[in-house]
Image (tube, rainbow, N blue to C red; front, side, top):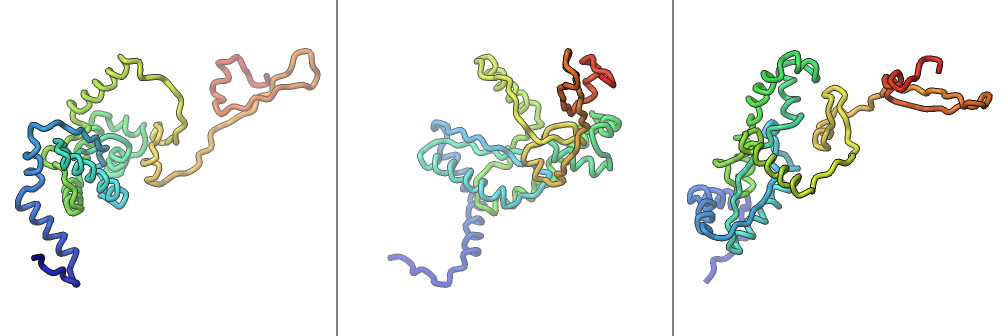
Amino acid sequence: MYNPVDPKVDFPKMEEGVLKFWEENDIFKKSMKQREGASEYVFYDGPPFATGLPHFGHFVPGTIKDIYPRYMTMKGKLVDRRFGWDCHGLPVEYEMEKELKISGKKEIEDYGIAKFNEACRSIVLRYTSEWRKTVTRMGRWVDFDNDYKTMNPDYMESIWWVVKQLWDKGLIYEGFYILPYCPRCSTVLSNHELNLGGYQEDTDPAITIKFKVKGEDNTYFLAWTTTPWTLPGTGCEPGD
């Protein structure tokens, strides 16, 4: 016999009841313990910045990232799911610049790079409690107590180890890739950083040079460049 389904079920209340049951009975940890000794399924998850609050752009991929480990766990695999924090990049630096009321690479250097780095480290985990609350409320099973941070030396050393393996196997090559550029920060921007706002067109200095064709009257080549400061190094002088 099955209990009849309540036609007026309160789904939010039911959801909160499930979350409470998981928390009080350590269901996530029990699911991991049941798989001790099993073959591993390694799931790589790009970590978010903890200098900002979670938003809809995190909820959808976060749900997908929860489905795969659960599925592989159900197939008998041991899936270690450690939450992580991205501690590098312009979002962290930009937050610190606003607090210190400085702007741009030159002012950071004047302030002191070592001091600025330490100041950035002090804020990279500003919203971890909000993230933990929201991700848990989503129903995602992930280990916050054993999290990792990209600013930790052991993490950075592991990345360099991976790069070294790729280099030894001849899998790294030099290429060219067009990216947005921030003249204030003197660095390229990722799409995420660009989407933070403040994008504007910046006009580079440009000049058109006229080169006379030898043996020809009134015949010239025109050369346009956005790096006029390089012309003296190529032997070009005003009036050439």
